[in-house]
Image (cartoon, rainbow, N blue to C red; front, side, top):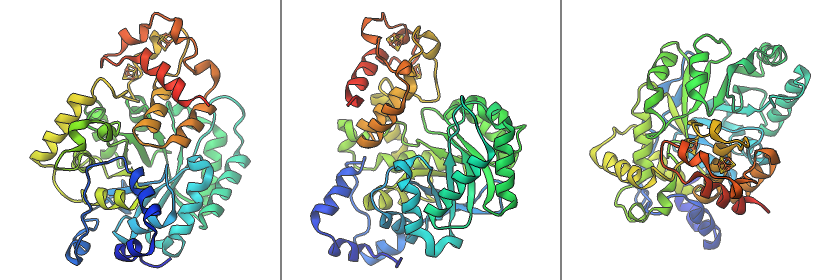
Length: 394
Ligand code: SF4
Ligand code: SF4
């Protein structure tokens, strides 16, 4: 795949197609940065950080591919210096891995790729099956190896004591199909602590943003000092700026401020942000290597004022024990966030459809709502759950 010039891209595409990409952007106030050849030179990744003890160096702003509409967008990110790309077997029902291969196969040696596989907590886990799933992922990505293989969405590292999982990844490493291992988590308060005594965790992908970062700071430092690579996700803390009036019209970009807040932490090696359009790529890369400034902090403060009682801290879970019906409150609200704030409508509906009925908010209307009283952030949990169920049920 050849290097893509933005000018070529803009002139070669019908405006309708470009418009699609632009409307998918979750940021509405961003003005394209690349208006001259000088801008083209300056809009590049400016910082690469050591990646744990792997010996690799990773772009501070990197690319997540949970939602992606064409491989050229990934390639554009690569052309601007992004060298770390994150996907998963489940993203876009495996298409994200396929796009990854299409975009990056001819520069494979120059990039670091992660893919992730989830294993159900119930049911049989078989080593051969894990190996076979990884091999199928490699085929889709048109590569012989993956740099980092993660176990996807781990709430408790006791799962990584499963002998079949350990044997499978050990075999994959021996065969040269996996270089490093790790996990992604929505429960960093527990899993980071466990990772301090777990050798599987060479790299961790965790939620880290200005709402959810501060309380895990000490653990994050310990993990990083142990030599584990750290990647931040969900850095926009809900990505609600497209729905908040004062931020739509803000002079500066909230996503850039939120990214800088995250990557200014020396215990974070990089962040991944979903780059599903060309404007995303330009906007997010524009935050690379720059220190957090006063305008960023003002913007973040404005966001926090408006979004604090709207944003479900996915890693919090305080309300779960209050619910007599075992509703997966934070998962349901996360899927709602994908739909309304990230504009990933199809994916959100699909994720919700995959959730067991017993975990859906089916009896909320007749419940007195102890979850609302349990939420320390003042979310109208019950109302949001009922609304989300209506939104995502098809
Ligand atoms: S309103 Fe719904 S989620 Fe909240 S406690 Fe009742 S059943 Fe559980
Ligand atoms: S207590 Fe509030 S913020 Fe925490 S998981 Fe529940 S709804 Fe989300």
